[in-house]
Amino acid sequence: MSLSIIILAAGKGTRMKSTLPKVLHSISGFSMLYYSIKEAKKISDDITVVLFHQADLVQDSMKEYFSDIKFVIQDYKNYPGTGGAIMNIETSHDKVLVLNGDMPLVEEEELRLFTQSDSDIVMSVINLENPDGYGRVIIEDDEVQRVVEQKDASSSELLTKSVNAGVYLFKKHILSTYLPKLSNANAQGEYYITDLVELAKNDGFKISPLYVKEENFKGVNSKKDLSDAEVIMQSRIKNSFMEQGVIIRLPDTTYIESEVIIEGESIIENGVSLLGNTKIVNSHIKSNSIVEDSQVVDSSVGPMARVRPASLLTNTHIGNFVEVKKSTLTGVKAGHLSYLGDSEIDDGTNIGAGTITCNYDGKNKYKTKIGKNVFIGSDTQLVAPIAIADDVIIGAGTTVTKDIESGSLVVSRVPMKIVKGFFRKFFA
Image (cartoon, rainbow, N blue to C red; front, side, top):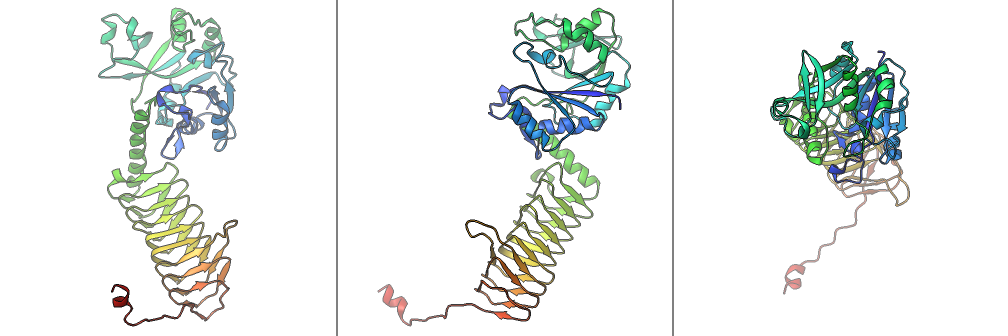
């Protein structure tokens, strides 16, 4: 599409009361700015992000995900304000959409609506039942006449329920003509985008309102706003999965980040958290379990289990209080109370309660490899690096420190000692 997009992300966001730049605060696993850029890329090949406050931090954060967008630093000293932010930006296309980096709920479909008008300016407008505190957009004959701040509005203008949603589409000639004419002769000493609307209207250019959903264009200015936006985002994510056939029990109690994939007839129980680049396929994630940056295929997890990053579970069951990290489990049963880290465990193997892979020596991590049809008794320690072949039995309470060949029984126990009469003597 022949559309350039400018995303405003220069502000400090003082109302967030945080040292982190406002646009880097996260919703459902990713920063607010990430969502603005992601949706913008669906409709444009020319995206510019305007930065100022902690610009290096914001830029580095976004470069982890996007390699083909431009960053510019606002000349805040000489040209503060939203109008100043878009000065001297080179764009490739005749239409320029100006977005805000603190609108994580905006969606591609609604952004496309801005391009369907041939007006010189398209201005987003929200109708509010209670517009108190907002500038009013005065609309007559389906054209924007002016934008009036509440303190400057007449009694009749205050009855208007149409307010500015803060997103604009400009034809390029409007920006080149009127940006140099902007003035900062106001109480804040800033250059405002809204003044472009007035300048263009005075010269007879057509300015059309685009009525948008308040939910989608909800700006985040405080941590309360952030929480409200999170609720909306989570509802969208979970509703989408349920429409695709996923069962989510008590969805208000679950947390699913935006890049998670769930396929097939999966069941997600209450209290579950699915984080990062997790993929669940035909699996049952039971209550209060966590899966992070891992894949679970044809398996069950939990209740109260944790699958940490870089794990792959296939045809496997892990039960309550089992933790798996950076491991591949295929056809494995680990019913409860185990830690399996940096391991590869093959089909038919049973992990007894209390089994742990001792994968860290204080300096380095080591691998544990377990073959097929291995029975590991309760309270077993597997000291890596170690390899256990197929068809092995390891007795309960054993500490395994050497590789084990196929067909072996491994038992390591201190002989039991019984001292008769000790109880009465001890408590005499």
